[in-house]
Length: 274
Image (cartoon, rainbow, N blue to C red; front, top):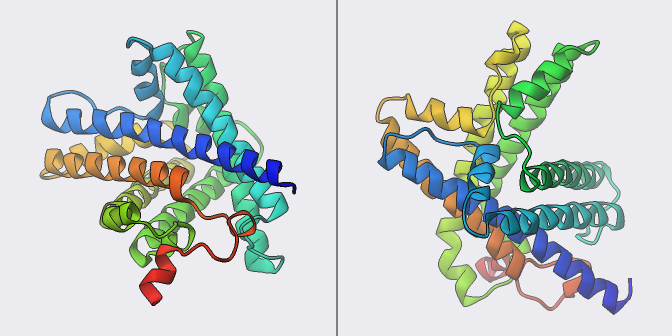
């Protein structure tokens, strides 16, 4: 790729991570509000719908939608061109397939954000809707179960990525990234645990052939609130979601792309080893 292509891909990547960061800033703030007041914790779709009613909310939704499409482009290009040097062995191909898959998923979310910006409905639980559609298909229960396993794997991966510090391999060593390191770790671990809760609800739905058992992030947050000391746990979760939002914003500014950034850029992981 030419230098202009490199710079273009960097900005696409930054827009994508920035859009993800904006979504989780909103979700984390609303989760904290739910912990402090007697209001229901909201999922991603409802949180974005609430943004639409705010001043400049529609413009913000369009910006987030385009950012998520940029994230889709970044992940697909990264997977196809292997700009992060995952390689062509079995492990590398799985990682690259995961990049492409997450890109397509975020592209779908981006399109739904455009629908909200144009006044589309925010009602209903999207996880239940999709589960119901899948279960109506041949082998539908098995498809939902497979989706639950994939989501559980993603949750374990995010938690491991945070706990082990593996994310440091892709972050440039800088005073700000060093200072924010503990917050990024907590954000990734809590986000991974939330994905695991969502995966569990999908697994129950598949086991019982009951789409109403499926829930998205909003249902996961509601489950946390119903636990003993639920409001405290929900507050911690809200802070964790803000930490995950910060992780995405830091990625937007400091992510190292091996085939583009070059071999001389020092990462947080390299600093920890030195």
